[in-house]
Amino acid sequence: MKGLISAAALILIANGTVATAGLAEGARANTASKARALLQSGCLLVVPTPPVAVAPGQPEVGTEAAATPDQTGARTATPTAGIINAVCNVTLNILGCSFSPTQVTIGCDTNGDGIPDLNIPLTNVTTISGNLTQATLSTQPGLSGSAFPLSCCGGSVSLTLELSVSGGDNNIFGPFTETQTCNIDIGQRAPVVISASPSQVDCSQAQDILIPGSCFILPNGTPNVTTVFAVDTSNPSNVIQATTETVLSPVMIDALFNFGAANAGKTFLIFANGPSGTSRNLTQLPEGVVSTCPLGNEQGIQVTVSCNAAPPPPPPGIVAVVNGCFVTRSPSGKETLTITGSNIQQNAAVTVSNGTAKSVTYTDFNPTTNTFNQVLLKGKFCKLLPGPIVITNPQQPASIAFQCNKTCP
Image (cartoon, rainbow, N blue to C red):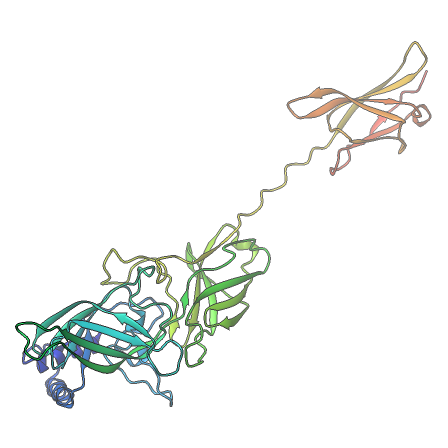
């Protein structure tokens, strides 16, 4: 914030106002000297009104870290460096214009050819004094948390001030337009993560997550993403790094995550990180940001991946119980072995001395347990008696063997 305070003081000094509290004597003199030099050269001085907040993991506005590196990699701090990542609106103080503009636009180079191809109009253009104009970078449609379209990845942009005057009784010169343009550094945009797909996964298995967004590769071809990671919403110290991440294009990342079965039921915020900072995915607003500004990313959406809840434990085993047996003969001379017990399921396997009968019928149904209490065997069982009876329910352990000492009469 020191850079912003000094720059604000610079405007006031150049404007003839004594407002340099907080600056050392030497700094005040040096600041005033720079202001006069800038004005005499005809170059605009542009300073954002503090505070200008950015998301965690992004460089502070006005610092060297927020500046766009030159061809040698060197960074130079300027008051506007980093405003590309600003949360919501930013008011710019524009000093040194020779007229009172009615329109202010920023031109952004989106394809790296050095020519601005995206115009961003500022709002609330107001003349404060003879050489000081204020204008607001306002949030964009569909971008409730950012003043810059997603196709603008920052860097050096053109700032154009324009005054259009129509013809009329009070204008003997006829209609004319006056413009003034200068370049300012708004810093390089941190990666922007729009969403993650799929967003609901089985975390016991590795998951391939597609992450659309913007500025994953900068217009000059510089990679802007080096790592992708997920943060547990209920425990920020639980961070899962992507096993691999592949930047497929400036607008798409393919990341492989191994969340692990231990994270079943948890939700993770998704982030991309690179040399320009960490993507925005706010869970609370930074200090100084108005309460109407949204949480989440630049679109006001929290980007998350949720792990499916752990599967319920299997139901307790239903093991058949055998507790009795008897043999009866019908008037026609056919024998039946009646086996009594409980928890006997339909299609349970029944053996006597490891052999099977010709016919098996389940009777005495218990609707409470959805099982039977009796089994009737007919045909080919007499030769198996006496012997142990075992009943095995489908996909369940076998019952304890019951010794049936009955024989056919």
